[in-house]
Length: 289
Image (cartoon, rainbow, N blue to C red; front, side, top):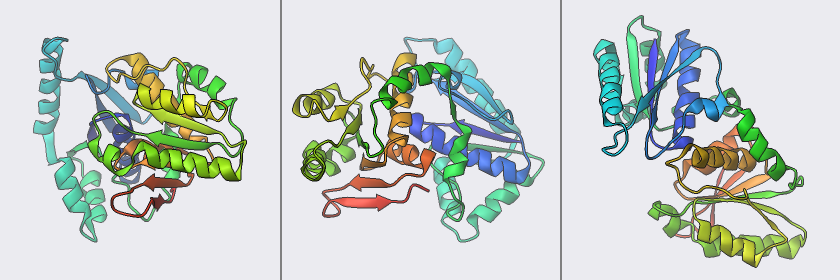
């Protein structure tokens, strides 16, 4: 059996779940996912999407002195019991170091095939580079609640709608490497060539959304009445709606260092261009797969 402690934000967790499921299928093992409901992600997975029946999700509670500290202590006890039963525990760092070796993934697969429990803590994509990754992300089937919010937005798209993922707030690298001015430059370039072009804007910053809606009212599409907090279930639903809508664009122009853009591109294997005005002249291109 493989136990995955899926960590960090929504994009990171989708990364690690897709990776762990691929590993479990190839090792013919059951996969148990430990999913923290905490201040960084305040929603259960089952209100966002359904997963293959081979994946079991066990909900745990992240640390909070204000909210449910007793449940958090019980959750930590559950994690410790799994770790104690495991023959191997891989953290994100040790997993990353293992996969730097040429035969690292082969060794990881061998560990997974053993009858003993394998425990993985991860917030990264650890799929092998040799596989077509997009099909691995088809395991996430959006819930009815998510589709109810996403459908009216998607109805405004045309075949050439461009997705813009503009990560702000606490992500200082994205703010530095992918400034709003660079996104506006891209909008201007596209509108100059195609005056009727439309752009779906996904951002965690309401001021950024307001600026672009004000500047380009006929061209910008957003998730209306979105909750920008990640602490509530509604806020996380809106985040997943953004990922889903980005994945339905013709291409994505994304922010430096954010898994959000990358996961969206992998869901439907669409081109992703990362704005990076610090380490390159403008773009770093990523294949969707």
